[in-house]
Length: 631
Image 1 (cartoon, one colour):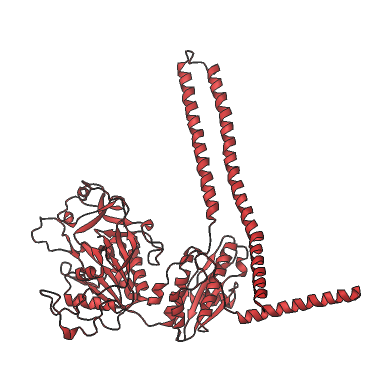
Image 2: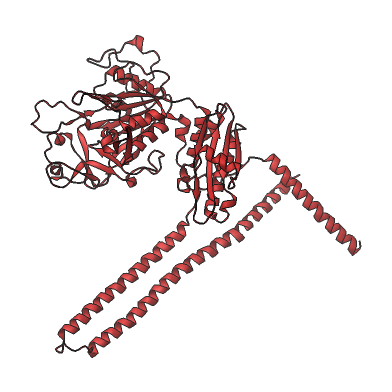
């Protein structure tokens, strides 16, 4: 065969290989469309089971419009990376919905109809310092009946809750009916007539905010069953509930209902009777508890104990001092003492509480307790009786000893729990509660049909206006200005619990941005050595300064400005030593850079050399094994 023929054959072979490669890519894209392998540590690209159930249960098509300023953010790589992360998550949602989610990705150019549409949806345009045009990165969703839900702007610092936010938007559009909350309150949150002022007192601000989002039905404090159309109970200050009412609550929870429960060892918003109190003393708040339910579910709450905290104590005007007094029972719970992993508390500021209790689980409890709010380690429990006839809050500091560990003030309770009434419905509230009426135990559940989801807060006063909001009248309208996050905590809890069980199951995810932990470890070690050397330099400097002062004070010719030979020698010694120490500091810094560069070279060697080598060996082994198995 001639050389030209060989060249033609080689060229034809290359062309055939190229065509075959392109065809193989096209065929594989069609055959393996949607097939992905998630090798990330936190399974960033794998939807949770709760999200998949939400997407599977969509009955009517939902339109999603992802507005992202692609061209305007060409010079902002960090934002573009997160925008691609959002788009990939949305595409994963659309793939898992099997056509029920219709995703449109739109670049709202300045002065375009798309930008006007984004503004009509209520999406937030952000002006970045490095970008002249307004940047959009939000989501709007619509369903078949015209409902709209939006995420105004995807904040990169909330990346761990990205899946939850998207699942919540889809779940709301898929089931647009308004949730009904059953209120069981021993205090008047909805407003009442004040006999002293002869006026109607407005409803608590937290109730007003919740009423704007949900339909709230007041069930009172005495009932035998919870209506079927109620999916969430909001229980506040439950004092002396009958066994029949507690049984109705128990069976509601056993059937899969959720509850947000506020109990309190000393509720200042529910003053106790004032008979026998000294003149001028403020009334003591009353305790509330659900003893039968908590005992049966394995939750420990002691209504005779109040959490006192020396670190979180708030200053109050007690009237016994010219300046505010730190009250160990009034706590300002800071964000570092809240769960950053739970959607309810992840983004909150300070929450104020007053004379709160402590929550725990009994040793053999089947429940799981996840703390939402905790005290500081400088806390302990003190008897609730110390708040009776308390003339001066400073007396709480007498003999106070911190326990050294945080105490749980609010928690999420989950798990498969037994009924607090194992023998069925109580036949009477008097005497032995084990006496049951067999005719009334039909349909009784001895354990929860599904894992329960409760949020229990050991403080009722946190709901009152005085703890978190100032209400002022402005041209006849009541304007509420919050100074704490109490209201946001309650609304977040109600929204989370009122959602579907699948939505509650979608919890915080890992972050897309992965820090170089080994590099940070190397840097921390080098900085520690750097600080140690720097501190030694400071000690040497101080010692030299002390030595110079001693030499100066021992001189007889104190009026002379000239240095003695001994002083000059001491200064020269320090100058030489300082140069040596500075050289050592530079060596430490160079060592840090060298360690990081060595790590980089090692990783490059693995990625460029070792991984392809292992893949090649694995391929050769597979080919060899296949040939060996052939007859």
